[in-house]
Each structure stands twice: as structure tokens, then as C-alpha cells.
Length: 489
Image 1: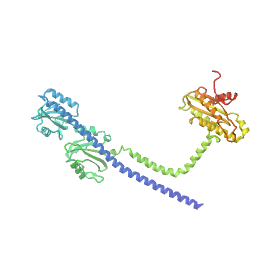
Image 2: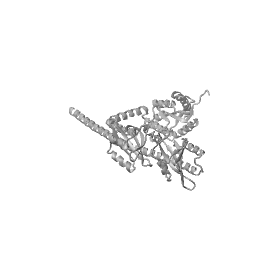
Image 3: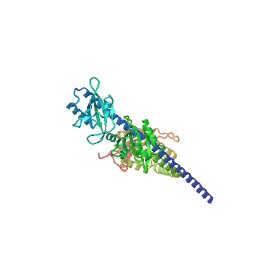
Image 4: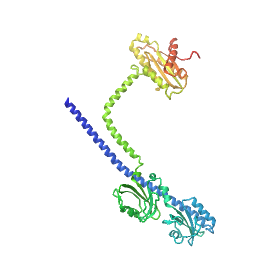
């Protein structure tokens, strides 16, 4: 006995050890998958988001160029482009666009601004000189004469009717405001954006989130950070020189962030977007999938250990429940289960309209037993039960409640005529029952029905009235049916 006990402990310890190894392997695979999947997906999502926002920014700039060129074409067709009405046009265009100011410059560089009363000297501005050559121009930041804000100027040439350049139309807008519009919703606004050129010089810095880097180039600011995953500042310099974007993971002390940069498409500018790692990785729902997988693996191991014991217990319990609810001879519901099922259905929310409770007896069943024996009588009952199951719907309740007494409960029927039709067909079907051991035996049945809710709303009431209807048939010639009718009505 002790030897058997030791063997049992040995097998148990072995199974537990194997299970713990299995669990450890699952956890290792889980964290390995999480680490690589989160990192890869974060980088891909960041690159996609920043690329999309850069495309939107470029689309806005392109659209503003088209707006400028439309106004420029109109001004070029005017004899006097600087007349007062055209000033109103420029102010109207500012209100309908992203520009904060629009300026028309004549050929000699005299500028008429939409929001400045005094004339501007544009002749020394690089964007003016370039636009006078017939090109679209995006300027480097220019300080606003009103509030010192750094503005970007878009400029297009104005052509006269002969095709010569007669002036320049310029629109000024705050790139930082546009950047906040496009990038402000990413990762709940936790990141910040700035624009640099390929030499690392700042074109625009995010006023809300960006660190103060005035006087520092991009490369000087990131010279003291640690680039992870094999990245380096030299690789970033090479990317900017080549005009390509990338996603880099950087660390300064305990602060880990993702640095994403993409070319804007103008003046060798790059949009740089920086977001903390915890924010970039916060919203990935797939992490929960890995957690679920791990939970399933762990639970599966436990289930396997307990499955054999539980299976036997559940199987035996179900067999007992089935035996407790069914009639052993016919397989139909027994009397108790029939009553319970009917009462439960009558209280159910799906119980709508008319219902019918039918009581049915095999006519002169005692004579069958006395003449042919109980074996034939039992077979008659089994065939009668089988006929009832075939004749009525699978959703109807069919039970044996006594020796030769059966109950059928028809659910949600359209009207009383369907009950009469079914019972008439059932009586005819009984005539076709044949028993091998008693070929001359002809079975008939008598049935009585009560309808709910007219005749009652519970099993006992319907049972009593169906029994009265059945009794009226049995007092007559039998082999028929009756539906209860209130004698007082």
C-alpha cells in the first residue's frame, strides 16, 4: 500500500512539474510576443500616422497655393490691382483660408497688406525675388511686424494679360497652428511636433509641448540622448541628408520616447513628431488578446487536470436529471415534468396568443391488457407515444401522466380550428397503429382540449377543463375528441 502511495505521489509530482514547466513556457512566449509585437506595431503605427498628417499638411499648402493663384489671376487681369476693392478681396480671402495675412506686391516691391495700413517694402525679401521669377515659393520663417510671430509665407507670381510677371501675391500663415490642428489629436495630445530642415535647423517649434531649443540645432539637442535598437544620431543625420523618414526610440535618463520624422516636400523640411513611449503604446487593443491567450493556456492546463473527474460527475448528474424528468417506458416527460414545463411556459414572456392543453386516453386500454397481455399493452403505449411525438411540433410539450393517459400542450397556436384539425388527424392516425404480436388489435383514442387563456391560465385549471371535455367523449362512442365549452356561456 505504501509503495502504491509513493508511486501516486511520484506521478502527481511529475505531472505538477510538467505543468509548471508548461506554464513557465507559456508566460515566456507571451512576454516575448508582447515585447516584439508592441515595438513593431508602435513603430509602424507612428510612421503611418505621421505620414498621413504630413500628407494632409502638404494638401493644405497645395490648396492654399491654388487659392493664391486664383486670386493672382484675378488681380493680373485688373488695370489697377491695388485699388480699394481688391483690398477688400484680400481681406475676404483671409477670412476664408488658413492665412493670417495676404499681401500684394507690385513689381517694384511695394506691398499692400490685408491688415496693415502702411505700405510694406517686399523688394528685399527672398520669397519676393524668387516669385518674380515665376515660381511658387515657400519661405523660411519671417517675423510678423505686428506681434513678432514667426510666419511662413506662400508666394505666387501675378501675370498680366501679356504673360509677364507684374507682381507677387503672398499669403502668411502660422505653421505651428496648422501643425497643432493636424497633430493635436494624436495619442491624446501627449506628443509635440516641430519642423526642421535637413541641416537640423528649427523652422517651427510646438509652443505647447516642445522644449526650448532656441539657439540649438536638432542634432545638438539630441546629442546627449541614447538611441535604442541599434539606432544612432549619425543614422538620423544620414536620413535627413537623403530626404527619408524613420521612427527612432530614444532615452534620456528614465524618459523613453519615440522620435518620428518625415519629409514635408518643401524646402528640404521635415516634420518631427515626438511622443512618450507609454502614450504611444497605450491604446493597442491587441495586448489584451495576448493576455487572453495566456489566460486560456493557463486555464486549459487546469481544465485538463480536472477534466476527467468533472466529466464523470457531470455525465452522471445529467443522466439522473434525464431519468427524473422522463417516463422510462415511452421516453416522454413524466407527470411532474409535464406539469412544471406547462406552468413555466404559461409564465414565460414568449407565451403569446392561444395555447391548448390536450388530454388523451387510449380507448379500452384495460381490455387490451386483459386480452393480449401486458407486453402488448406496453408496446401499444410506446407506439402511441411515438405517434404523439411525430404528430405534434418539436416545441410542443408531450408527456405521459398515467397508465394510458397522455398530455399534449400546443404552444402559440393561431386559433382553435388548428386544434380541431390536429385532433381529427390524430384520431385517424391511431387507427393505423399495428402491433406485431396482436395483428387484429385496432387502437382508438379519446381526447379533450382546453384553450388558454380563455379556459384558464395555469396547468391545474386547464387540466380540469380538458378532463371534462375528455369525459364527454368517453361517455359517448369514444374514438373522437371535444374542446371544452363553458356551460354558462
